[in-house]
Amino acid sequence: MKKKVTKAIFPVAGLGTRFLPATKSVPKEIMTLVDRPLIQYAIDEARAAGIKEFIFVTSRGKSALEDYFDHAPELEASLRKKGKTELLEALKATNMESGAIAYVRQNRALGLGHAVWCARRLLSNEPFAVILPDDVIAAEKPCLQQMVEAHAETGGNMVAAMEVPADKTSAYGVLDIKEDMGTVVSVKGMVEKPAAGQAPSNLAVIGRYILTPDIMSNLNKIKSGANGEVQLTDAIAQEIAASDNVYGYRFKGERYDCGSKAGFLQATVAFGLARDDLRAEFSAYLADMMSARNAAQ
Ligand code: UTP
Image (cartoon, rainbow, N blue to C red):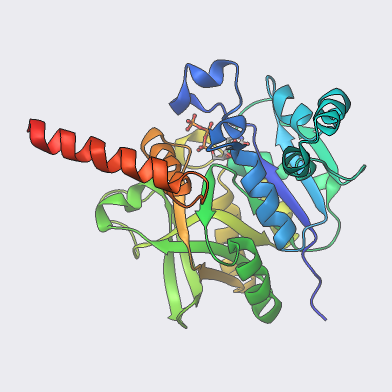
């Protein structure tokens, strides 16, 4: 029987330079989409997929992230006294069972592959998920849950994938497709940030992975790849040659790149409009703003 995926790694040790100066003192993952920090969306998605253990790879200056998951007794008592049950409910989602969450440090930002490798001692011989909280995915069924269900059939290594325009492939890891089975594709190669015109397809990898323990062994050996960083893509690509068990998964949903300013703004609009309590006021404002702009042009 295939082993269940119950552990997830959240690499949150990046410098977040695209959001400077905000990220000088606020971790990117604590930045707020409507009224929840990015990390909350990632945790909720992991929980829906059956994840029980949450491993954060952090770095200097990320203590706000650790505090976020603690109880806040004074705040909770004050809300209780005022009868603010809805807010108390919202706070509940931020609490973690004792021992369910672990933090390891990446002491230098040497890349995503290196960040994942930092968690190696917290895993045993089992598949594990990796979630990048700055990729926020709006989906009816949460993306990782879709992947866990597909992975129960395929096993092996699975990466979330989406079609991107040809002129955007150089910003992603790109899949070289062996067999396209529709939602799932088997993969014969992966290239991190291919040069213009060199991408093997327009199927790009985004920040959700289900990986085998072999990936950790590969990361043990990798020095550095594109941009001088240890690339997770390289460790996964090695499994294609070694075990031929790498799959791309075309998830259903809309992905927002909240690691970039434009992506964050788009997510803010989309998530704002999706909220029953905000939609009427917010969409009226957007419509007014657009007509005022059009009139001015
Ligand atoms: P990014 O490529 O978005 O890098 O990392 P970044 O440092 O967060 O942001 P910019 O580019 O400087 O603005 C993708 C994910 O990998 C993590 C990040 O925290 C983010 O979740 N990461 C990246 C690490 O944990 N460690 C690293 O050394 C690099």
